[in-house]
Image (cartoon, rainbow, N blue to C red):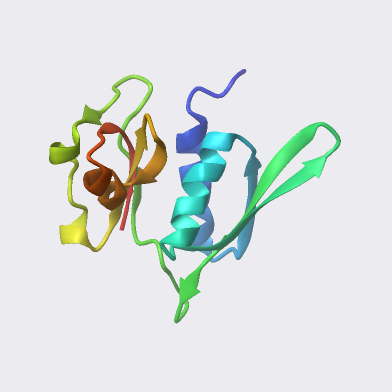
Length: 131
């Protein structure tokens, strides 16, 4: 059986691993997932992400970040789903927790944070929100 929503699967793996305190996890590779994880790394929500190649199959190793024993990511929610896509213009991109969290937006210029999309004045698909 094929996976219907690989982005939601990756976010669920992160959520589940942080619930039980695992330091690093593996997930199937895609360029879209790698871009999302690089944004999370740049914003300080995860420690590191690297691509592991075993034969013709690639995987992503995600090193999760904890502060004083608690996960840095309090909440990570998939916004746009395959059954209900969520698009908005640059002026309607939601503020997450009054600007303390981020929304990851897939735009024609690439995957970026909500702040970068507002400054570049591009809208797109709201992939997920992170608090």
